[in-house]
Image (cartoon, rainbow, N blue to C red; front, side):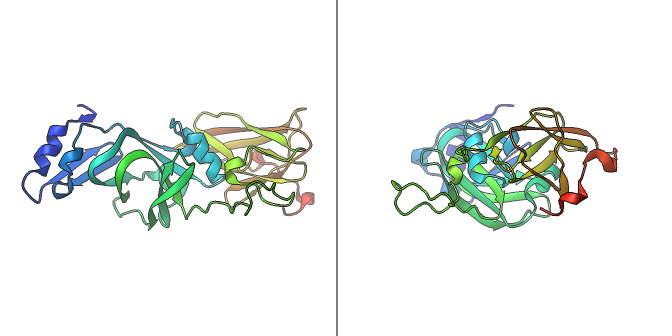
Amino acid sequence: NSATLPKEVFQAAAQGSGKELYLKSDGIEWKFQGDEIDPANIKDIDLTTSIEMDHSSNSENADDITNALEDKNSIIISFPKNGQLPAPATIRIKMDHTFREYVGTENLYVYYYDNTNQKFVEVAANLTITPDSYLEFTITHNSDFVITKGAYNKPTQPENPDQPQQPNSTPSRYNDDEEDRDSASITVKNSPNGVVKANRKAASKGQTVTLTSVPNSGYVLKSLTVTTKNGKEVTLRQENGKYTFKMPEGKVTVSAEFTASSYTPPASSVKENPSMGAF
């Protein structure tokens, strides 16, 4: 009934040979090999761990991680600040239905987020969820880790960092708050029972904005609307589970309503304008 594993347990597991220390709680399992425990690094370990989708995470690094990954969905595993572990730990994360829907079941990558240098350090690549719905990887220390579908590729930086980028260059993902001078904000209102993610925080008139609906388990999207500062509704298009719209002049607000999964959304819940053509 305690979230703290006392050092005496590691000391006992390190004695003799072939011993294995196995810990299990809701959503996560830890496994240490006794032969790999470093006596000089034995200490109490706090096992309290938060495993959440990026938009729900309380990690102090959540905003930086989400901004860096842009529209790439991720799951953030926020371990306590234990630092270096007494031995490498094989971690198994329970990937429930909501997590599987959010990041997929294969080609999954795990990264350690180095908040000091604001970079992602690869821990495991091209993983597939096990038949019993776990994702397994090994770590040597505790901090924030990130699960994504596919590899994260940091944008190429200019050869001369003192030289400003050309107007037609792509901004770094680490600076995605720096939008064009003529851009306007995109505000996504909080909704109970689910969230909506926009692929950008601001856009210029005419730019395409993509919205992704992420209902909580047991819920579906009932309605999704985008309105201008004057209350005028913006036309949405739906394709492959995502929604897109052309940015009007001025800021917009995105609102969503979610309901129990037994609900079948009417065709009018997302309004389309056929005359606009494909984006």
